[in-house]
Image (cartoon, rainbow, N blue to C red; front, side, top):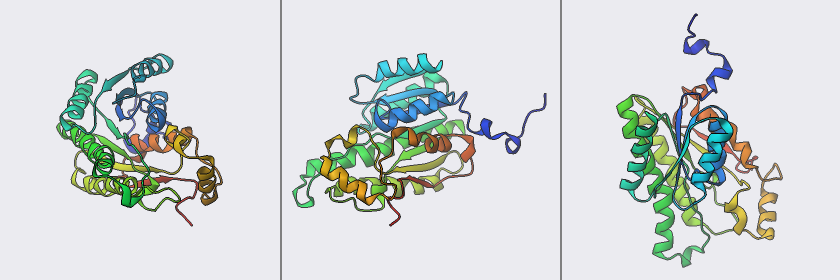
Length: 263
């Protein structure tokens, strides 16, 4: 049998995650669960990292059964460096390696800028910025030992524009605080892993449930596509980032927003 060189691999093989081990923070619901499902469908072995989503262990069992793969849940708080590091090390030990980490855990809140308490502002930063960095850092230590790896951050269109009419300066700042470190780390870690971002626009997940119909109507008026995205519409971009199809891409930010950031 002739072994294919990477440049000769057919496109289906490039997108195939069979044999790869992927860990996803915030993987028990929302975008994270969509990503976990996509990777399971592509043949990967999955580790769902969660903090408060108590259904995550059952979700992992369901994914493992449905897609005939290995899927396990690990509870860890991304804002506690020792805790998230221990969980990621456990994943690498249990599965024998770690190929991809998706730093996806995040929270959002809405407050007028003048009314933010220090605690409210810091909570957003702790989860969205510090947590994302600590997640990537813990995985990068493993990747450096292995000599290979892949980091995918979930950023947001809010990293590059100001959402209206909601007031969410802390959230917007936090997502900008994901985007620039991702670019920096892509350069620093280029010898042993890739680092890229996905920046979704308005996606119909639980995060949007706080918004009144009137606010959602205003959002729709700002989107050239005139609709919100279904979570499944993120599957392709996250698969691309995790797969060998994007093997030369690092430091990029993939925007999926129905044209929202263009006008």
